[in-house]
Length: 237
Image 1: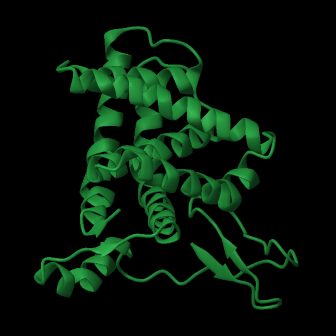
Image 2: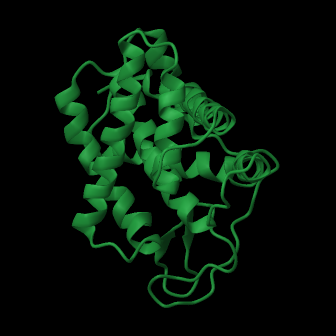
């Protein structure tokens, strides 16, 4: 979400999940609330319209590094905005009702950012056969996420530390997900455990908690394939 400051003209970027008054990053002036249309804006509807002619001709538009990164950033922002007050709140309520420790909102938000960066990664890898190119492009996406959101939200981390943290989380999810490609039908449980471990710093206890987190991860993974995955299929990378 972008809001232009009416005083100095600076373009300010927000994830869409912040609460309260937003302030300009340049002059610190309170920013007006953006107008919200009657229907939720879906960037992939726009992509579909733009690519109709290309799809008809059987061709796909080539994504450069900048366009690729912007597409992923827009997807993260829109997805978090859509799911913040519905699915996320319901999940946090459920984990407390079923006996898990209460989670600090800030900690949950941090782990969601890491998890969504991994979701962007698995969707990109799934669509493109060129892993080296994706990894090169993806580093630019992480840099963009850091500059636009992460350094403001998690300022306690140095940039290098934050990048290491993101890389470690992505590798953890990749390892858990690899069990699926080895034929393990319970790979979603391993992904759910990985998210729990990142959130609490320990392994989950009990089948109910594991199942709850597995369902959460499955719904997020499915939603990412239905939005970002379908959007990326219209492009060459």
